[in-house]
Image 1 (cartoon, helix red, strand yellow):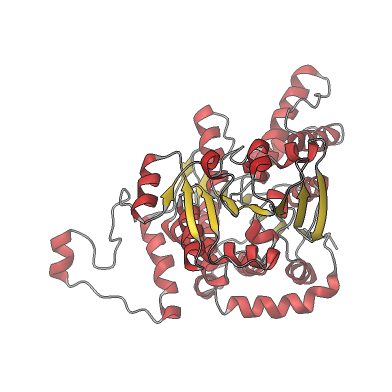
Image 2: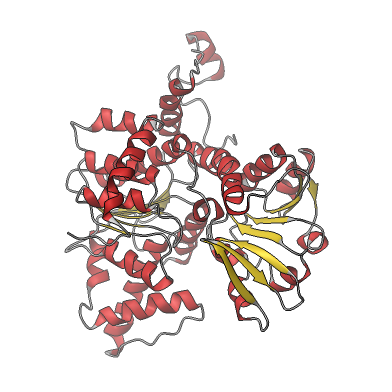
Length: 466
């Protein structure tokens, strides 16, 4: 069978957890009930590049229930729950993921998930790595076709060099693989802020090769997963990793978008004094008016006990910052990529020693006789040191993913980046309310006419900011 995972014997444990999670995922259950007879994804070949967790297993099985064939890889080297991967493999669904992959493993797994005889037709992406591989493969094939010579590895970034090496090695075997893939692809649905940023960048440059749906900016994703999900999973990751008492500590949170807002609420709720750093004056003002101190990393680096990056940007915590930190300061990231913290530069510094305490927890001894505690090597702390967001909030996100995949498969789209209509966003919220015992108020005909909305919604204009 076509899979590579850590241990197939974990499948029974994984199945029990999947059943437990499904009971907390009313959105996906409702979509299965609504569409299982119509099979709106019948014939679709879907590649997934998204954290291979228990909750993702429920998403995968929903896609299969609606008629799709699926191949899956994780989008982070530490985020796979091996029992979830085993349960999916046991069902005969190709999955290539295990916790603790190397970067070479990771990109090999992504390649396997993308390797259909013809296809894929659709991509479910988280961070844009599957989309990146298709685009880079296409570019290298174009270069090979024009010059007749194998392209050279020329990326400055070490991880991108791994991607190029893998793709160039494939060129002599199949020099049109990615051109065929692009011809088949009806589109990608993207889960995260970082991946969405990449898509808009490609669109604006005129290099986007297929349509995309921005799932991240569905309100029932960004205002729930990013905010409420991080509010619970950040503390879970830090606590499992370090067993530290947060109360009374000074916590520096870099970034006050939806993720940063959830993190700030989490740490304040545990009794920390929270300090925010921001580049955006609007977000900074929001933080200040919530009662948080707003300051710079440079000013707080010798004072804070815990540093959390949540920006989606690079070099937020630099090596020179790390050298000034308190002894045993905790450093972690909850933005999508690990380059928010200069981890590689830190490892390359003379006199730095990495002492592993337990999986995804390292004591980094510094040349100044101090040390810091680094979680998940600067990758996602909530998925590396814990198991990610709770099932209920992931049901909101993944319901949007399923709806986006149906939209891309059922309808032709010009190459652009789209969002799901407000009506579907409201419907995702609606199906989750009964689980929480919430009762919606119904507009009267007069009230609906007074505010000029349909009785059944949508209730807000697209420009409304929740």
